[in-house]
Image (cartoon, rainbow, N blue to C red; front, side):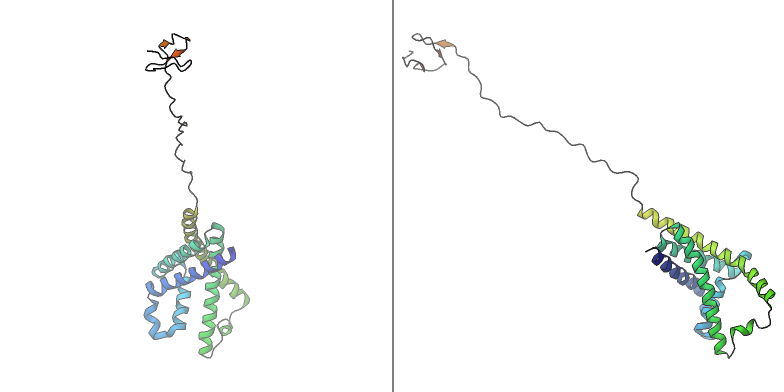
Length: 211
């Protein structure tokens, strides 16, 4: 699951970043002239511009990398996965640039090795060292956007810090039916002396008529 989120976040990061450069950077205007392959190659190269100099083109690359990293971070939903996504995104951008350059050169009857034929080992090392700071800065920019996107996703998925307290239950004591009133005798039978309730005509004990 983690690897899936990283790969999906990496792909979305690249797509969003390339779309920003393609549209805002004006590469879309070169599409009718240079064709799709060259236009995509220009887009990937623009993402690897020396962003440390913050020229006009590098500002577009900066916005594109942050936007792509943010979208990728939303998918990764983790700080660690967002950093891995940033590294993989730059690696894939470089690999895509090399692949597109090879296809374009092949269509022109050339080979990508022809570009480096006149360079020695020390020249290649110098070239790689010159590109390394820009690649590291690109990774850092994507990582910043990725961390922001991951933070948004993690905050949305985080449960509330407090649990709502249920309302207090109201205790209702059981209700007992009212007892019948107890009548107190006020007179006694003159024959047997048994207590007599008011209003009786005959004694309930001996049966003699009271009046």
